[in-house]
Image 1 (cartoon, chains in turn brown, purple, yellow, orange):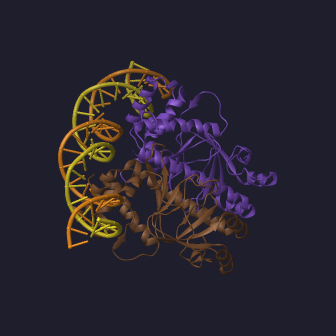
Image 2: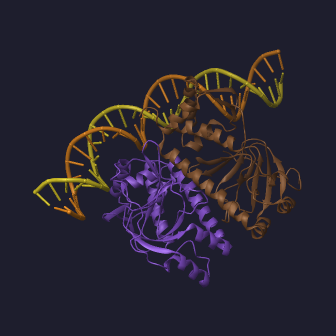
Image 3: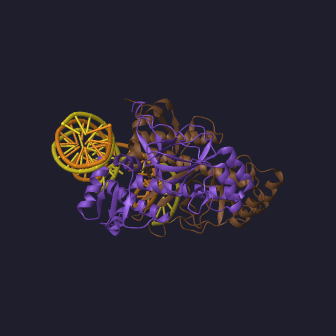
Length: 246
Length: 246
DNA sequence: CGTGGGATTGACACGACTCAACCCCGGTGG
DNA sequence: CCACCGGGGTTGAGTCGTGTCAATCCCACG
């Protein structure tokens, strides 16, 4: 955990102006906007590519920008005083990251893969919000969704066994991919065992043991590094729900 | 868990029209409104008294109303398929309960004490939102706060020891009371050990043991049922942060 | 006086953590 | 070409913190 290991901060690799993808139906923020409004947003927004492990922003940074993840995966983490970290969520293509009404961000956002993101400065966003009130409604909508999924995560971490947590996590990956229109049986899983453990309130060894157990039961395969194929989602779902042996 | 034990549903005991307290500086929702707007809200809203254990709404109910807790305490819970419950939060006087952009509520809201609440139907709220855009901003603000505190709770449940969780919980009670202007050394604590356990992801026995341990160390007293006096918040804070014996 | 809900306490079991060894693989440099 | 290295992952042995189960207490209430 030396300063040298710390993920380096966001550094625009190129000042690419405009951001078409950002306003597309794929992206979260601008979905309700019409063409004219989209043009306006695109003119303000900056798109940029960032490498894996780059840090988009840190807990405590002034919350001066909002980001849309166009491509790639990110993890959101909070740090405990004793150095342990809790992953509060993962974000995928299309998700909005870093919107808050607070002065500062309340978590770190770090990329797990090479990614493209779209950046909008707060003053510009605020102007847009004033101009298009439906945008504010959209943000509220996204916030409610995040709140609901965080509460679900609280249930998972608070009340389920290690295996049930891992099963629920794998199924949530399927669900996340379905939401963004993914297809096929094989999932991308760019997070390490440690990331998953920090998300589920477990240790990386326990996560590893659970995955191994699932594989031995024939519930999943790992055709390659950071790839999973779920062979029996039914069994995983029953385990996640705790309806296995009651 | 027989149907007979189920908390009975909300039943307006009297159709008291108007709701001054609902728009006061104390209440959460209407804080940014001016006098004229307040009158308008008050005309629409219904205030009512409800007994302890009453259920304001249930997970899955159509989300047709928004509530402000004027006086009393409530717990918000989610149910697991296996019957265990997770308390996702407690709410106190001044807090808004049940606002969501979804079709249905995503948790149960149940009163821990006799309470007064203020009720507003969604169509009326939506009309108000259209009329006073700042209200929508206020809701977003509240939602972000909830999200942040739920993430904090995730950290607590995911990464801290039983004693650290209970300590953090007690301190959060102090903080919640401070926010609503409470004073004095003795806290109201209307939740049972089981409620606290379901909030912290522990069993009620473990919570009981932690409280007993704190009492034996002289960190708190319980002058009466559902009352706590914290005698050494410093020690509790150090324990909650995990900075005790590192 | 009996009843029931909440709380406490104890004995014991077990699931997850800890610590440690080891494997696998890709990258790097001699 | 191969040795070395480091990061990620797996596996094992042993410990310990919580959960589980059960007995008991306390007190408000009918």
